[in-house]
Image (cartoon, rainbow, N blue to C red; front, side, top):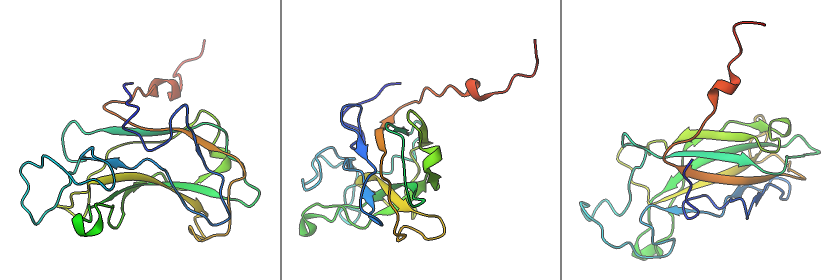
Length: 191
């Protein structure tokens, strides 16, 4: 699998992202991917094919060869109050010069679904999916991130729960995942 140290959501092998926080605290991963490459707070340069009313951005979920992403647990998660994790793949438009080129309102494009601490074991891939198209249709996000929602499916993200241990060791983007799906296929014969 080809990985780029600069195209990730702020969790890498040498710098894992901790899931430990205060009760009810939500944790956006620190790596915001700027589809223009300049970074948050920087004016976009070299914009081609855009009219002034659309603003800078791109929908990377549209092309036939769209990026893939995956998230890997480092240290196993632990909780004393039934906390669960839901990872949200989000995009936001550029606020422009008046907004200091910051991310606008974040829109969720896809989610991992609520995962229990028992599912968040060391070395487990907890999210693998293609880069999903932005919506509403025609939205052109400039910024992309992963957002760690901690709560419970019934109590939502406002639930007063938290993890006491756990890290995400990698949250990355690649052009193609090396999934070993055959390893999960049961044998149809016995010796």
